[in-house]
Length: 99
Length: 194
Figure: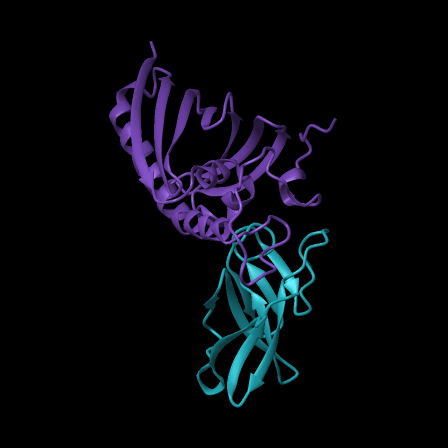
């Protein structure tokens, strides 16, 4: 089963953009020069999750914050940002379905 | 002698009725989404009722005032709200009518019992209520559309969307709306704890 999804050519990938892929919406950021992909639906109630100041995730709906590792830092609750595996193949960016 | 006034507003939105109902009961978004509210605390919440302490920003006058709001769900898709402000008693009946899977009608019936000192301003009060409703309605629109999109895409509260392709699930608004234990909503000293 092919469970990788083409996003964009590497040169055209826009970190400010969110990419609608299947049922999800994917955002990207760099950590230690490595491209990371996350679901931009806040895991709390589905608000718009943004990676801000190059260090953490914010959702303005209910004030939830998450570290760059995806752990909730604003509330005492076990709640994590959903990440997806990313590969770059011949200059093309793909995300992979979590299995 | 006081005065009794009423007014109604009808709206329609292209989202599921469960999302509309959730929006009325999700108290946590009030402080960050709605400009007219400065703060909110939940004093009591169970499967059909909440008692909220709201701090309103009074337009033009530039100060804030506390108001207690009692919100009750006598049955599915019906919300009854009672509140008082400066001696005026307000009853609001919200009727949510599912039209289709992605369309909902909402009827909001406002009733006011005004003390004598507000009676001369009844027309202004009706006008302010409609403006307030319009403002909060517009502020909520992006939230409702995104929430509807999330639910259609198999979003699970406190989990997210872990798949990229997945089938649609049926979402149902259950009360009280779940929230983290340490949220500011629960920190008021009047909070009722069983």
